[in-house]
Amino acid sequence: MKQYSNLASVYDLLNDEYDYNRYAQFLDSEIRTNEKTKSSLVLDLACGTGKITFALRALGYDMTGVDLSEEMLSVAKDVCYDKCINDILWLCQDMRELELYGTVDACVCCLDSINYLTKIGDVKKCFSLVHNYLIPDGVFIFDVNTPYRFENVYANNDYVLEDESSLLAWRNEYNEKSKLCRFYLSIFEETEDGTYERSDEVQTEKCYSMKQIKAALNECGFEIIKVYGDLDKNDATDTNEKWYFVARCIK
Ligand SMILES: C[S@@+](CC[C@H](N)C(=O)[O-])C[C@H]1O[C@@H](n2cnc3c(N)ncnc32)[C@H](O)[C@@H]1O
Image (cartoon, rainbow, N blue to C red; front, side, top):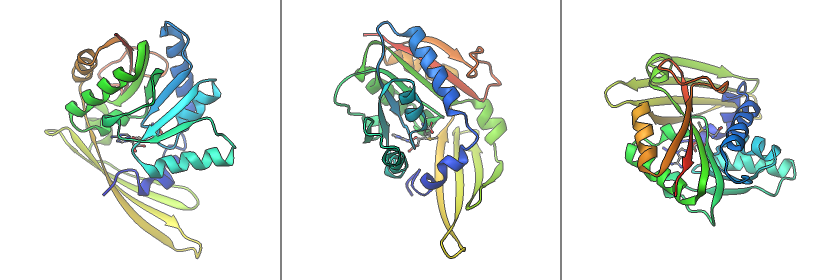
């Protein structure tokens, strides 16, 4: 079963409370602080429905959004259509096989998209390709879900999220040994006649340690500038739910 196919229509409901503008401001501030030449072209890797892409565009960047899910990109393209936005390049690609037309000045990859790469070799493939397409000294910023989150927050917990016309039931299964976390998602969407249609999706994320991510970045030609534990730029700790990596492409 494909990931992010059935979920695409309710993904924004799932992240309804999430403050994408705040995340975009964090990205903007890190890009501006660490760039050596002014960045204008930014790649949003695993952009999903494009929430970060749109927020960065609003801050003045030229955006390319890449995602593996046609359904997620289709939600982003509908927004473009509704708002008459025609200056974002959307590409349906696997981030392990990224193929761009040219270089980008900076790359971001948000909301634990890296954890969807379930082998460290795939993470390295992706980092190497990002390195390949970044200009020298270009900034790469991404976040990952932490071991603390997998072990203590996701664990084997269940959640239910709902709005007026849809309901999402979400069951987690975290395997401490394999470090794989499966999310079993059941989506119920109201149809025109008032009945609910059910669809299911299984997703898998992999838990990586700080050491693994740092080693992968170094191996793929990045210098690590900073790892934050939150968007307020506090230092990373073992009890953060996310870590935010800021790295520079060395060529
Ligand atoms: C949690 S969502 C994050 C989406 C978006 N970055 C955001 O901030 O809302 C993870 C995204 O990663 C994408 N994804 C997962 N594996 C991928 C891969 N191998 N290549 C490209 N995109 C991938 C999914 O399709 C999904 O849109």
